[in-house]
Length: 423
Image 1 (cartoon, rainbow, N blue to C red):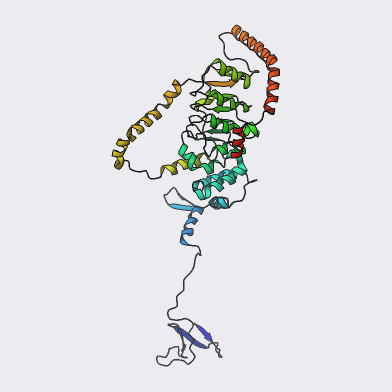
Image 2: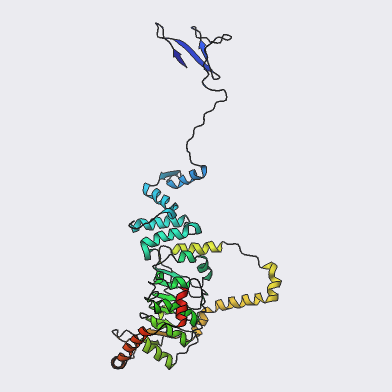
């Protein structure tokens, strides 16, 4: 309702809007029933409606705003909510778009740990479209904090499915690939022999059907180009069809301290012991080395839960029902093969105890001997070792220097040239 004009009493004409039209009211205040003013103003149509737009975002995105609140219950049982801090909201936003982040170098480690946990909760490292880029952003900035040790023991399917993500971890110090069926020509070999794995200290390659050819390929970069696994100190090659000829490629590992070649085609005879003593300064270990028990090898780092998420994701895949194919399995002997595989898996621990243990380790000449029945025998054995070491140094000093010169001047073989061409 509004008025226009004025008179001496301060009142003018009065108009009333009815059904979208304006009507002039008589001076008496009544609206004429049959008289319609000539000047009527139609501001809105009869079907006009007003809609209040509260939010411009789609409904799907509006639901995400619930993450900005924390819902709790008070002592009386009533539901209450409080808003999250601006820092938590910012971390959630960055974690949801971690694949678009250019770099996190210089970002504080405490905040990066929370950011990694938030991205992990949002399954950003499980989806193939965002997992590689997300892990790469964190690995470039925080190196071994993301993943320092990786245990993939008997997880060949996980290695094949997540090979692109595993190649992102360039700062691993321990890698357990026992029972992953690599063979001699696996695609993962190109990653093992690259600069990305140059920081590896412990490598477990047992039960991988690795022959002399595969060992030659594994050691070719360090033998020829002096790059690859040059920092390796502990190597497990057990349960592989290796021969004494293939073990000759291990001389390139100058920092190797412990070696496991149990359950191979070699025997712990005098020639094998003299080979490791003269070529690699390693001696035969009478007892089992604790490094190769796999008790201390585990996944360690921020991405430990990510590995578990990968396994959980792989376990969610639908499995085929074997009942309709029972007759075919019986005809082709599949049931017998399955029973034998399960029986062999259950007896893995027994096989480890029954295998012929062949462990070599490098003696620490500065450390005192820990074996001996008494003090007198201990001193005698130490003195005998000192004399033995001195004579070996005097006799093998010239041979060691000549061996170095001959190794540096030795021409490349045809097999080495083919391996270099493959890289």
